[in-house]
Length: 140
Image 1 (tube, rainbow, N blue to C red):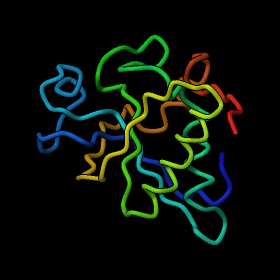
Image 2 (cartoon, one colour):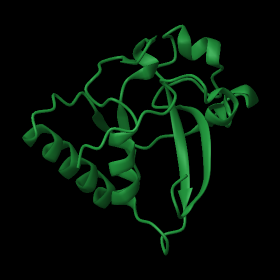
Image 3 (cartoon, helix red, strand yellow):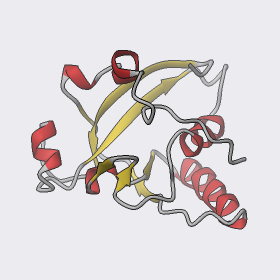
C-alpha cells in the first residue's frame, strides 16, 4: 500500500457507453478500458509518485494486454485531469523511452469513470495469490 492513498476503486473509462458492465467492456463494443480511480492525500504523496508507481506495477510496453489478460480493455492509458498531470505522465514516458523501453502507454483526458461490479473491487486482496496481480519492477 502506498502512503497517502485514501481509496482505490476499480472501474471502466475512456469509452462511449454509459454505465458499462464487465461483459460489455470485454465485448470491445464500449471503447472502455479497465481502470482504477485513486484518491490520495496531497499532503502525504503526490501525483508524480503515484504515476511512477503506475509505470512500475504494470508493464507499460505491452499493447492491448497485461500478462495473460488480452484485449483492448487492458491497454495502458494514463487518464489525466489537467495539463500538469499530462506533463508529469509525459515526462515519465519520455524517461522510460530514454532507458530503452518501448512504451505503449497513451495519455488521454479523463472522462466519466464508471465503477465496476463489486467482485472487481479489492481484487488483489481477494486474488493476491495470482502472480501477475501485482508485480513491481523498478524502472526509475
